[in-house]
Image 1 (cartoon, rainbow, N blue to C red):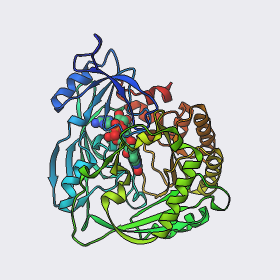
Image 2: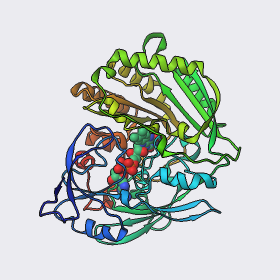
Image 3: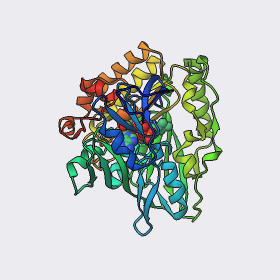
Image 4: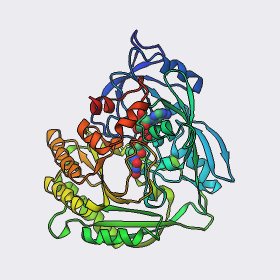
Length: 450
Ligand SMILES: Cc1cc2nc3c(=O)[nH]c(=O)nc-3n(C[C@H](O)[C@H](O)[C@H](O)COP(=O)(O)OP(=O)(O)OC[C@H]3O[C@@H](n4cnc5c(N)ncnc54)[C@H](O)[C@@H]3O)c2cc1C
């Protein structure tokens, strides 16, 4: 670490090895780590020499949370819970508070997040700025639908309070706005009532995509949470197989919160042979068979159901020193069956997919952000170990299929989409640009807007 350059205030220090979750790039960045909201004006206000970007826990996979030409304002120190109304479940917290912190407070009181991504190590600000989604999208929509108001600091020093009725246009630009409309200082979120910290979870193996579509259709009405693991390696008679999971909250009054001290750590980067095709195929086979044997209904705590990967701290190191790309797209319902089959064919033929692959239907509830990713249809998300040009070429081929099917890519997972693909994915980008704060930028934004 070295002190900041002359063009940057001394509140910023140059730090090496600032990475996002995919670990494909490793730049040094100027980073400030404020502890109090009062400090933010000074940090955003001297942005003439270089741009600023607020960052959270950097669980985004690519470059949307990096700003290597400018500076990052690391919001993790602003993590206070500010107010809670236990009649309505409305919680106000600083943007750096993590979902883990919020749950540790709210779950024992009988309140849960209205929707949650697959890790609890995400900040409130990051969840708003990507308008994240969860396994209950078909029932609850995206995270932004449950935000009552946002405190936003702009680089001109103005503190704006946004809601669906007060400054609705800037509110819509900030939900899913990738940190580009200013710094989210705090947000007010409506939590969901729960009568237990446990769910009844049913796992059902499916042998092909047709069985997946049937299960998804049957389950949407009676299950609050649905998601599927899909085998993206096997071909022939095993093509399109997977495990469908559906769950509802229990009502047994057992309201114990999760414990962040129970995790195990990955001590070093994994060796390359673990990522070769045969090893991954073997792992998929084992996982499928083991899960088939354990099919049926189980009582499961929310931590192991929603956040299985959080039990393994630093699991991204399993992808070795070169890191990994995640690819997540959504395909509109009318095109989904055909396009998902074509995507899966391309992926299985490439032999590049890893074990982690998810298929999930999104419901009809509209997302409130101008750049929100969730929309009615089906989303496929999977990891690719970084094999350089081979992987980039594969993802370009997938882009062409997604574009043809009028689908979209998710910026939170992306580190390489083109400007053309971005504009195709987010047709309201012109409306968004009007609200962008000129002092804010990111590596992602420079790429897609150039
Ligand atoms: C294991 C795993 C599972 C995941 N599962 C899901 C999933 O199921 N659904 C889903 O939607 N996503 C999922 N994600 C992605 C993750 O939820 C998002 O990338 C999330 O936005 C990360 O939040 P963060 O606090 O780490 O923010 P960062 O990654 O640090 O930043 C994300 C964006 O938020 C902006 N930002 C952060 N804080 C502020 C602030 N205070 N003010 C303004 N802008 C801010 C940043 O500028 C950046 O654009 C998953 C990620 C992982 C690692």
